[in-house]
Length: 427
Ligand SMILES: [Zn+2]
Picture 1 (cartoon, rainbow, N blue to C red):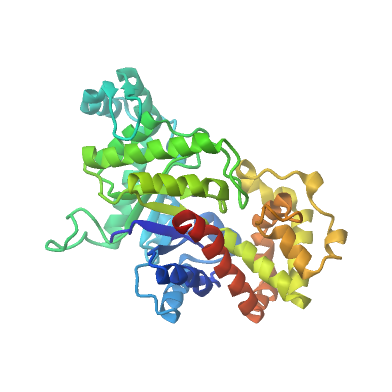
Picture 2: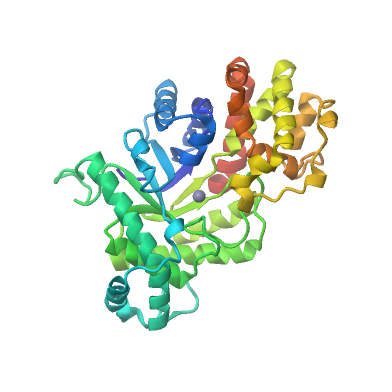
């Protein structure tokens, strides 16, 4: 299985918006732009909501059938580890191996030594096309990188081989794929770490991935700046742009150097809606003729709330109920996301004030339109992590999704097409 040049991780918390999401990609296709949809969902999300990986598979298959989607699509077991991968094997054909927990833990002395030995030839100045200054590489540096990342990549190798064994044999000889490539897509993610990886680290992480014979098609590093949930990028956009371009250069170089899959591309775990870096990303992709996988899953659940609010009546009442309950349980809801949200509690509206809002006002506070005076990023971030409340409402919530399907779908589609696809790939 090969992941095409452009793909979007659209996820979907409650597995109800598959068709509306796909409608956005169909609109792009009608403009001549092919983007592969990937429904990604982590174990954390499944646990909080009470869904199973099979629900995501069903959603994706049903959406593809209903929309007569004839292109490829995937179901991504997002951020899985050896401890929880088994529940995803049957339903998923895309696996994001998360080994962040293993970074910083040193591998066996012997493994570190052989890694240094194998890659000694890179000591000195390494010139890479597309990067102005050569990378300066020392033996100490390779050793430090091996001590920081080798164990993590080896763990990724273990997960990969575990999936490969469970999913069956690699592609048959005679197919146009290399013998090593199995029938699922592999991503290696290192985004949930404290520090962004340096270029030299990226280079040797890719070397280690190749050494482990992981046919990674996407790699998710941690980037500079803050990727808070549901709101725009916080950081130096120029610095991000430079870092992203240089990462693309390193990936292109490493593909050739280490024989990694030719379509290996960057995966950005955006945490949704990083609009201010979409422009620089688009420019960099053009410059390097590079592909992209971008995950922006949580954005759709907020469109469900916007749709409910705009529907008015009991739809709006449910949206208000979610907010009031979220506010009363803010510590609990924010805890799992502590490092990726910045909520100023003083800027959250009081529930009794929200109660007086009509649907338009609620939607305006929530919708990610930074030009709108009523937009409130604190309100949005709290609701972003409040899907647990909706899950607990059970059929009270899911029936409303059904009842107001039309208005919700319209918002879901428009959001993905207008605010994500167009600025990332078209405008
Ligand atoms: Zn991630």
